[in-house]
Image (cartoon, rainbow, N blue to C red; front, side, top):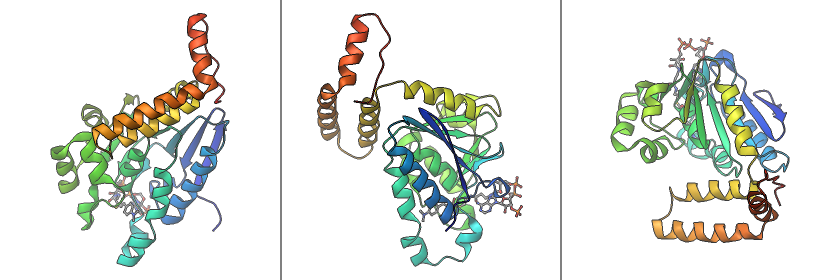
Length: 257
Ligand code: DAK
């Protein structure tokens, strides 16, 4: 399958991955999600990249969901077997990902944004899970990640009515880190990414792992996991450098070792 849907721009130590299907509001067909997973994995394996920004081309949409035209003729078996692998690959990316959302983040678009670790939204952004309006439900983690993020009652409201919420509401509900003026989402997300990219890469990776574990394991197990990862960081040169620089009143230079 020729690559066609995703643009990657490197600005080491960050990279921007853009869903480039603006005429269809960046609707996520299977080939697109597979292509995105491939690029994210390549960047994840590249030591020169320390934080990834994920965005949609144009200001109208981050992504308006899975491709309804493609899904309309899919069988239950297609859906059960075909689509999930690429999403799982995106879920397993270890580097921090920041979603830069301008316009619609609906259905799979919102679910994709929630695969990121932080969300920066333009003030014109709209979030929602409109699957029920199509006679279906979330398929890429929406019920689970939303319930853990904005709580049961607001998740029920979004998923049972299909309504869209504004960037301000999403921010008030804890789904969005920052709201920025319309059209500024990418620039602001890149600023945040550069801030993250300055940090010690092993620490950033373990923090992501530990925070995500909080959604999956009981507290005692999560605390034990955090303790182990914390101790492991004392095997890195960056721990020595961070503490040396603090004591010398200097800025640290982290090398990812
Ligand atoms: N799929 C396909 N095409 C889409 C699309 C979508 N989700 N959203 C928009 N488009 C296309 C439109 O058909 C139109 O194409 P042309 O007619 O120009 O060829 C073009 O994008 C512009 O859209 P509109 O003309 O509709 O633009 P408007 O400004 O009038 O409306 C809108 C914008 C976002 C309100 C509207 O486009 C809309 O309601 N879009 C659909 C939103 C939606 O229902 N999204 C949820 C889809 S279900 C899974 C993983 C994920 C999922 C499922 C399974 N597995 C891993 C198995 C996720 C499911 C979903 O996301």
